[in-house]
Amino acid sequence: MFPLLALLFIAQPSDHGLLTVRSEPAGIAIYLDGDLLGTTPIERLPVNAGTYTVTIVSSDSLEELYWQARNGRLGQRLAALWTLARIDAGTAQVEIKAGHETAVFISSRTMAAAASRAKLLSCAGVTGLLGLGVLLGVLIGTALN
Image (cartoon, rainbow, N blue to C red; front, side, top):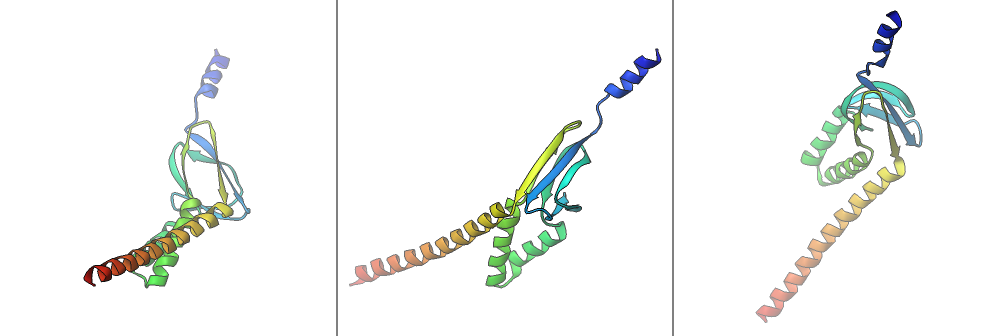
């Protein structure tokens, strides 16, 4: 009878899974729902089952960036937007399942590329608006003559 009871306790699923976070390069600070976990690599960390955000920035730092994007001078706003694009590329929504390991990989190259794309889109938008203004000016000038 005793071995049967032991089997019942062993067979019950746990309420946590494992989280592994690696990065290129190693040594990046990692936050889970805004709380510092440590630096990469993080191997097989027990975490309660659920949905989490794994990111490279603390909640406090994120709030400061949002403030700069809303209230800063133009240069501060643009720098904050580019940094937010970089952070977005270094963020993953993960679902930890009980009894399973979830792995996340964060690449500094991917983060840098996201910031470059944001800069390119910003420049293209400004150039497009400037070009549209010139075109409208020429059309209006032509129509008035």
